[in-house]
Image (cartoon, rainbow, N blue to C red; front, top):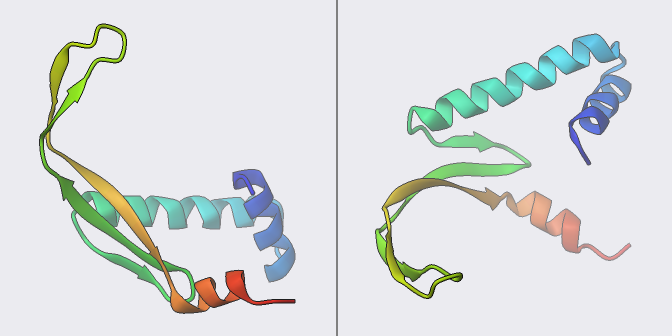
Length: 93
């Protein structure tokens, strides 16, 4: 599912116009992105939790030249699915 399909699904399920649904989806995405950028944990019941994790600096190799390089430390976003989402995914129908 891409963003336009998500907007269409939200509009249909909520019984609203696509323009309104698109604004709502965009606002939700912006709110989550802003919270994560501030270092906050974002938990959405029924969906999961977005966290920030620190990756340590490490050694790597340039695949083209084989030369060893240092990959700098960085922050990454991780997502842990909610129990109900995992169960829905693995339920037999």
